[in-house]
Length: 115
Length: 109
Image 1 (cartoon, one colour):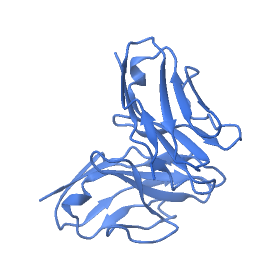
Image 2 (tube, one colour):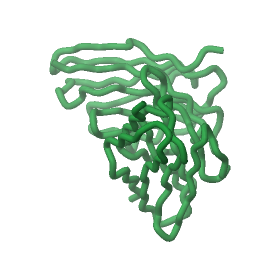
Image 3 (cartoon, one colour):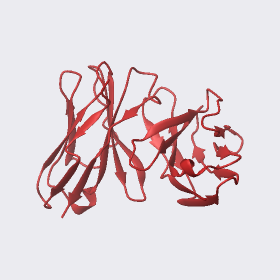
């Protein structure tokens, strides 16, 4: 079956513009995660969705970042008024159910470059 | 707050040599720890978890609560082990993983 997919694979945008990054999790996976992978900074947790529960937004770095998950499936991460420090690879992951967070299947990532 | 520290950004060894990738954590509760690996041009994937106490691709990792460490070890490194390795911690009652900054392992021929 298909794994986690993300689009676009690469995005170059000008400072100040808004961007939307998309994640399609594995079918049937109820948990979805977004991470940011910056050079030399490892993986930084951004947000976690589980079913119909309120998302854990504790990792979002500022109010310019938001995410939604429609119908318990596809998720969109939106960054408003992008800044150069937002340049990073944004990874999405999904897991089958709660309690199996370690079994996250990662997408290929979206490389965001803010010029 | 929990933290995961991987002190080595880069680690280079020769094929056949032992390798140890260090991971230290700080967490007041009972942690679950994991190692993830990302090979070149591939996706990040789970390598092993401390609960299972298994050996994957010749790698093992033992949780040392006294030293708050979860070092990844392999007695004889292979060139195909070259990759980025991340240590991660999951706190009890949470579905969030906290990752270290990663160690890039290069195994030279």
